[in-house]
Image 1 (tube, rainbow, N blue to C red):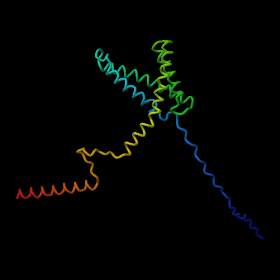
Image 2 (image 1 turned 180 degrees about the horizontal axis):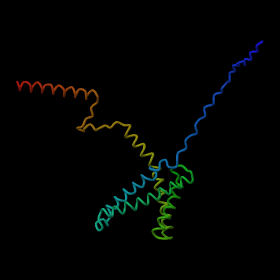
Image 3 (image 1 turned 90 degrees about the vertical axis):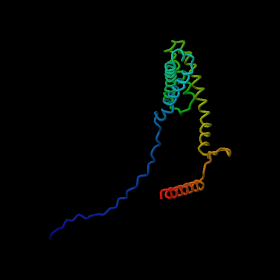
Length: 201
């Protein structure tokens, strides 16, 4: 009697629970995001303003416009770069939002102390730190107040259609008038072609 040992195949269904969709954590902005707007552009703008001031300076006639403009541009770019860099370092250290005036005051104090120390020793450090803190905070405060006004004015220029006054000789044609003008030009070209063929024959 042959015993057939056959292992029974049991079909078992395993319920696989779906993993709940895990929401990805919000990406925190890196500390270097926006560094061009907060450091590079102000430094570049400071250099441009310094060059313009140097060109209009009374010393430009003595030492030359190019030399004085380059000196003013370099100095003001260094001042702007040090201030903006110190303000950004303070913002990252305090983990605050851009536009916090406390960062402006601390950054102005530190950058003024550093540059003043290099320029005039301890007295220069005290004097420049106070000047930079006040001036930097005032500039940042004014910029924050002017940004919404500038943005709304820019948006109004983009959103509104430019209309010329009635007395202006320049006219802005709509689609129908433009199509009619193109049809007249085609008709004139056809008439000129017919006239030229008649002359040649």
